[in-house]
Image (cartoon, rainbow, N blue to C red; front, side, top):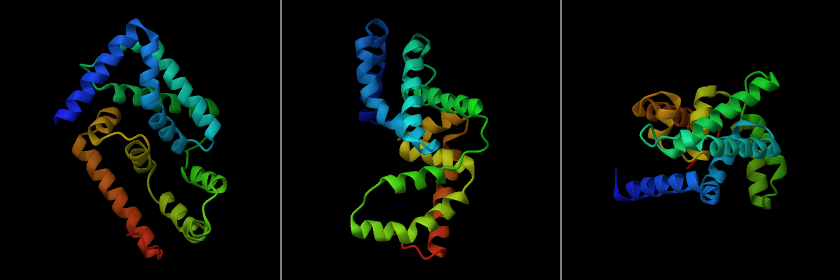
Length: 192
């Protein structure tokens, strides 16, 4: 662990300690983590308003359970993303939905985005190929990719959260990304 990581962890511990006695400090935690939590949830649900509501629930739960957080058990971000994952599970349980497919989110986001003409042409040409490639990944692979790239968690944090070894997480991510590249390349998409 390098000096930057240690400094970040110490700052995180201090913020949590201060937030326990004064909830105003929780605002700094919220400001720092909200975009990452929202992006993780946004990839997992097909609606930005639902993702926003779920993110709010995550932070409400985190604030109410802050006293139960222990830095000896893991980093604050792992604890927070565990709450996010459980909130997401609860959401889908109450919705009585089947398995979630992140391709729904990509389709919705594509409809909302207003790219420039070149970007629009490129997106229109590759959208179907990308959606098909993502559908070919397992739900587990999709979830790990969401935690890594949208949740901005590192492999160690994902491993703790998912009850896997850090090496196993790295292997799954490596294989999933490699497979996604192969699928896209076979479809004629240039992915440099």
